[in-house]
Image (cartoon, rainbow, N blue to C red; front, side, top):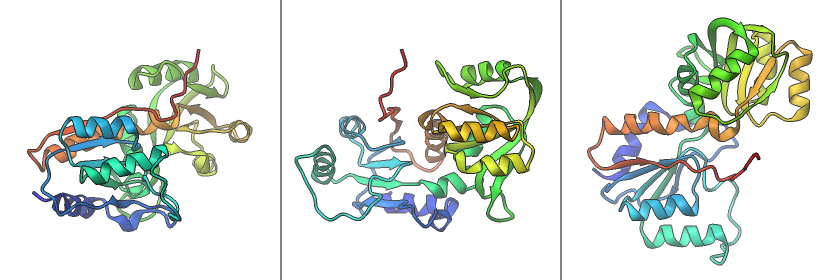
Length: 258
């Protein structure tokens, strides 16, 4: 199978026209007429992921976050990103991104997170059509305190810690999730009278605004809110191809809490 054939199949299920206007999903580096040798799936293109791809003799990198967001005015092959690009070209590796289109598609990032957290009666938080596409998901859990649920979330996602905004003794049942940066969904969560929003990248004033509107927040981090999607994609592609598929988990922010 050629790489382009696999891309075309994926885009039938997750169309590029779902992406936001500011986004740059799709082919980032195009050697897609080459025969597929194997796929590495990750969130971000890092030196470590690229080295892993070459080590595994794969020639297709499937990312969530685009490698290119802004227009290119010059290329510096002495910098980190330039060296990554040079090595990709030398090894004829195709790089592809499914970003906000994979956020919005009905089975995408937030749906994967909602199911991983065992939400029931899942619906789309900010729908864009009548077939379930849109940003975020919400559902219900068994009534329990915010603290108890936060501890369960840590266990389900394998997190060492998270950030809580809200009264720890509050009883919650209606829960929303947004993969990535989800502060934009606070108003919608309040409108739907959700008890809790789980997402990443919540700033101080976002948390304050939520609590003032009786909405608790769990900030699980951008990386942690999206990384489950790599396992979903591994299963998705395994149904289509026989070539090797690998997931690569690496938080490029490299943050440490001590």
